[in-house]
Image 1 (cartoon, rainbow, N blue to C red):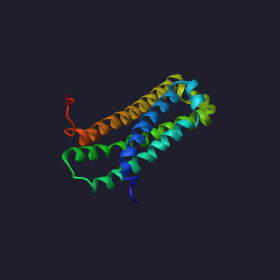
Image 2: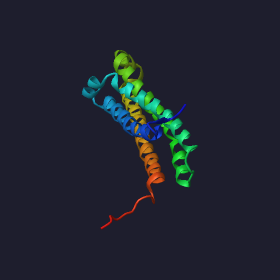
Image 3: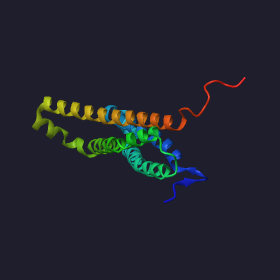
Length: 168
């Protein structure tokens, strides 16, 4: 596939979508999990945004691999590429949490009373706390990875390629 649009490498364009949708998916997931009013308003949007983020990551990586064959490889580009390899597992986790929370609040809450009886009130609270901690770790990891990868990519492209002072 030719990863080029109007003479621009598609990676440059897709990166912007990835940088928006991965944190947006993480935010929607956490809001839906922790805030009932947000959950009611977002509904199916949360797992759909997470799915879009999940689709964008490998497409952006493929476009980046295409671009890598067409640029001079530098240590900064190698760093960016290595860091980018760690994003997909985080986004898979965000998608799974987004889907699980949507399915649970859509279909599973009717079984909550039965679970509370089997696990007890303390067990039910512990399960909720574990679910929230897992979601926080996965969403935080995804957002942090996007920031780290984006910073490395920006350095690879821009560091040393402009003057720090304006001409008089």
